[in-house]
Image (cartoon, rainbow, N blue to C red; front, side):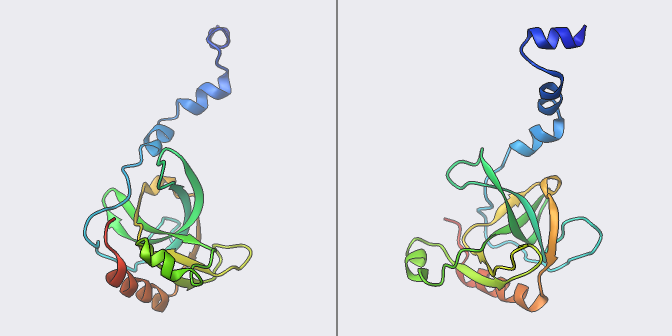
Length: 165
């Protein structure tokens, strides 16, 4: 009987189950990028299967121009602002050749090298101008632990370049 009612309403069993999942509804409400003063940056990777600062993980990264849409991307976790994880988006695009133009628009990048987060072994850069707030439950998978020395370089670059836009 329930299946018949769902069909009459234009829904099917699979679609009804997908849209009624409470976790999906919670994950859809992005609070916006972190815009406060430079947060406390911590390096505390722990091989326990949960996302921790110092790790590169994959998560849905909201588009800056439309946070209702996102793309699964690698991010570097840098800290926490309960209940959120704070992260820097990574890209394999090389911004060194257009660094002056990027800087003139308030965008800064730092090379973090390559790692297991990119199956093609491409070098990555971390965005220093955008700190994401991520729901820990939306983290899709671990990629790698970033080397402590590289993480400290990211911290120093953030201290120099971060400023909410």
